[in-house]
Image (cartoon, rainbow, N blue to C red; front, top):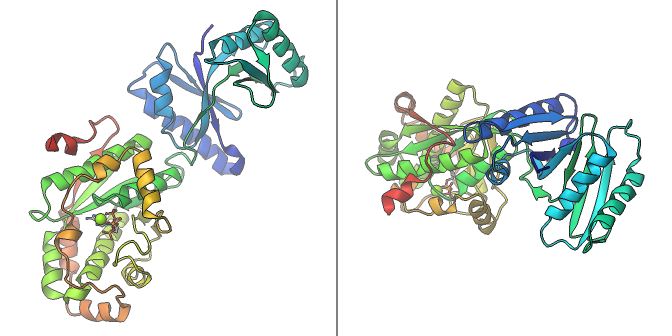
Length: 401
Ligand code: ATP
Ligand code: MG
């Protein structure tokens, strides 16, 4: 006997009708996709309300670690699978108890989904509790705060015995909520924004505005590394690198200094919207955060947002910097995010940017200069790099070492 399955619990309660079906199919596909390369024998199956990974001889630990990063999973446990027979279930429960570490007290919880199973849940609890006590010496039952809870799910096709519950990330499986274009800088915020969008089931592509030679190859590589690290939580991410030098130079040459930043942001959105159109992407996601920096005021958001009516997802808008940093650390991208780099927005810094830019003013300035050709040229010159989970992470580190 062994723990040769992973039992996966997902929060289906909040889902209804068609959404529920889509959620389940996508979750199964995403788990299988993640395991495919490294664990070729692992198989993902599902029954009513549960999903399973059949380990087929693979070491469970790395598979658990991989599944812990898949959105849509509430929790998971190693499981023993046996037939729906009282004796077999007794043996498996004993096995689970004896495999627990530092366990002195336990509790058995039976769930009988197969109503044709002859013993009712309550009675089965007692049968199993009695069996465990009479076949061991050092354990006692504690129904309130047991060291180990042995869960027995008697399902239609088989019975699964699990003990330790490992929490998952929750959220929705990536791919169930459509696509968004993440405006990805090399800072701390935008990758966290991307992660949170993915957590709601969003599949990402990313756009990065790059201004060589003012921003280096290394800065670009850092952005690619960040995108690569995000793929641990979903699928591959296409990063569109937009050559932004000419546009930025024109903006800073032709537009008043105090409005240059605002106009630059508006042009970033125009380019991004064009990419969304070309790729059938229905929204954009940014790391904007209200009040964090002078450019992120309500007036600024209002004036910048004027140029597009695409929805902009701003997962960080209400968060404190500390909360954002905590997520960044938890998801393992903080180290890369704080590597030094030059951003196109920090290279061209106006001396006194308007913190309360106005729509009427910015429109008057922009009327004097037609940027559309340069925008088309930038879109035309965009280079796309596909980042995948299998690629080696964090090459920006290597260069620094
Ligand atoms: P971040 O930490 O993500 O860089 P920030 O706090 O520095 O954000 P801003 O510089 O005001 O804030 O940028 C706001 C948002 O604009 C970023 O979160 C990102 O989504 C987008 N952005 C900024 N610079 C770029 C860039 N070079 N390429 C793509 N998107 C960018
Ligand atoms: Mg930044």
